[in-house]
Length: 348
Image (cartoon, rainbow, N blue to C red):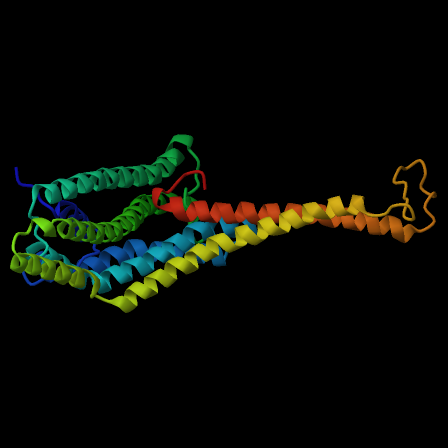
């Protein structure tokens, strides 16, 4: 039974077309006017929804409230750039995937290649369905939870005039009921599509490796040379698209990793050193620095500055540990939020 080696690509492409994240064409009426469909969809939902969140942060009166909204707003702003990036590269990616589909170099030849490809693609299909369903369900649970609790409060904070909060609450709720799941699915689909491109490249390299292992069975020297040249051509077509872009992506991954790692690392170092401060404090020579901290003997120390110094050291160590704990807690929340936001976890 023949299988479609590009089935996952076609599934994601159909979803991207529905979400207004692909490119138009010159075929049907919908393809010719697809650009207007894109602009209408994302202007009314993605861009406006993000703008209202930005205004809510700007006009918020509480810093803690602004920080809570800011976590969602930053992800929405990241989605805006993802959408613009998808529009810009959609046609180039389509041409590249079309070449991978029709070129004889990329055609699967043996049953081992087809079995390996099919198994990996099936696993990715399961991941895709799980990811999309879980993320969409997470966004919907927050929206439906407001109805079940009967609270007149939007599950995701948006800016609106004060006199609208009661008069037009349900109108804003309906808008959010459309915008939030839409942006959630857009975010998930873009990430999945980028992951699929990486998977496809990985499978191409795996096919090259399998063909190199079969060179001994190619027969004559001429056949071996021809097969080897085909492998080189395939490898060149895989990697010669844009080395500068590849380097930029590696730098981006490094920067994001450092943004997550450095605060945790240095906060941990600060915590360790602040804990050592107490150890060194009680390991020093106390023979000439005896201070009784009990209320019963407030006048035993002849030097009040000694008492204040000791209190200051102990208090500073405690405050450093407490502050670092807050930093690590905040950093962990942002790391976890960045990794899990595509699932729109309700615990944030």
